[in-house]
Each structure stands twice: as C-alpha cells, then as structure tokens.
Picture 1 (spheres, rainbow, N blue to C red):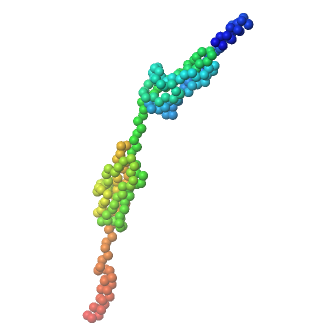
Picture 2: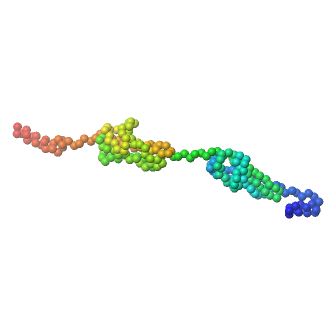
Picture 3: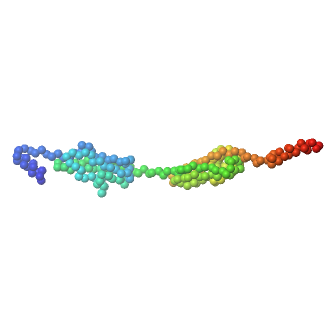
Length: 224
C-alpha cells in the first residue's frame, strides 16, 4: 500500500513514470552439499545462494520434481533413491524468484563387517626345552570380532596335529595355527617353535660310578 502511494505521489509531483522496484535475483544459485556420496541415509545440506533485492521466504526439498511433505528446512536425509532438489524462494518488494539445485541420490553403500582380528598373537609354551618328546601348549591369543574355529599344528606345511597341545616326534620347525571366524569372515594367525633332538639321559655306567670302575682296574691287574 505504501509503495503504491509513493508511486502515485511521484506521478502527481513529476508527471513521470516511477522506476519499478527490481525483483529479487540470485547472484549465486542454490546448491547442495553432502559429507559423503549422495546416497540414502546421507544428510544433504542446501545452500541458499546469494540473493539481491530480497530474502529467503521458503525452502523446499523435492523428489523427482514432487515436493516432499515436511521437508522445508536447509537439510534433508533422503530415504529413497532418485533426483532430490532443493528449491529456494526469495521474496522482496519487487516480487519473488526461485533457484533450484538437484542431485542424484543412490542406494546406500553397505558398511562391510570387519574380519576377526588378533589383538595379541598366538604363542607356544613348554615346561622344558623345546625338543622331541616334550609337550607343547598352543595359546590362542586374544581375538576380537570372532571366535576361535580351529587349531592345528604343522611341520613343513603339512598338518601333523590338532588341538591346543602337541608332542613332536621329530626335529624341525613346528607351527601352531589358529583360525578365528566371525560375521566378517576368517582370519588366521600362528606361532612357530624350533624343536631340537631329545637330550639323552645321563648314563649311569659312564657317570660317577664309571670313575670308580676305572680306579679299581689297576688294582685288579696288580693282583694278577
């Protein structure tokens, strides 16, 4: 009303035509950004652009050209695939103007389930020296994201036993292999020990009594 009166008074005073008030305009257009790939479940952020001769009066998100009910803010989380648009309406004394940005939203990328991991590795212990005939105990280590599925012992790449305990019958490098399985797959970890030949027991004949036997030998000869 005031604007109309001002134009009327200008006409009466100067007899000329008043300069029309320009409509709003977008010197930079509306746009859409997202932290990741535009996909279902990813927040889309609408940027209003830069407006002259007016200010934002409405914001609206659209899916494939149809307004989404209730989606009238600067951000939106899509629940469907398709073309999502962000439409900004600017209003000023000279009228209204709109600017629209569109982005294609894809299906959500599934988050892969990680495979099990060993936070501490398997190990091998024994009560004595690592040698043939000595019992070895395999320790699984600590597993996250799964549980131990199998244990086995190998020598030269060939399985020679299963379970946590093993008694080697030959020398060489022995591997204790642990397989952990979970929703994300399987992971294998291992420990290795070098097994030596068994230490022969001390002979009673060649021990301290042997020295006694040797010392009496000359006496036996002298008597003869």
